[in-house]
Image 1 (cartoon, rainbow, N blue to C red):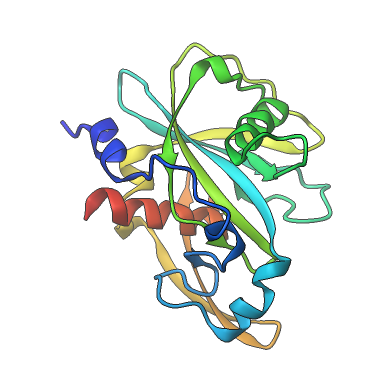
Image 2: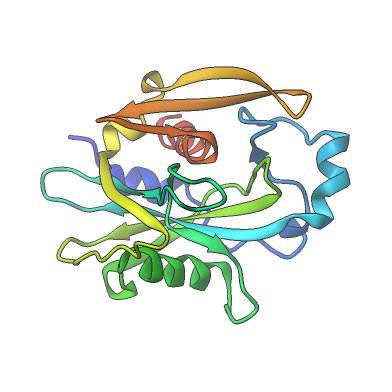
Length: 211
């Protein structure tokens, strides 16, 4: 039986990225889903990126761990209907990106911090929509009751961790977007289309855990 917790603890970064790292282009991102050096275009917009933090919740079920995800409400102006991690933009009131991720998880789905144990961080992820996203990987103990904010969240669901971190479950796509070729990953799970930054973060996590 795979000891997922030990694997994850061994590969996440325990230390919060410093201010210099958070002022640079993402270590990975929509334009570099497989890594590599940032382009001149990414450097040009690095100072304009809005910092966001997302919670990557690994739920510790006795039957096996899972990743908890949301589907955004269909009426939202941006990213409507898309699958996402709980999270959002870092606000001035937040003491750190960790506080942002925990606050947003409670506001969006009712997951309170007393069920959450922060494990560490994945590489910063630069989205094509102007965000520098910091994934905060956490272990979540069962027993919580979730209450989605209907203004933001349409659905809450879980994907078995062994499926979410299996690279063979992902399909690679190439599209033209705003006059440039973009590449992204997607995974289908029980009618949910997990794609874009969410799939990119999961693929990056998969590479760390399975390498």
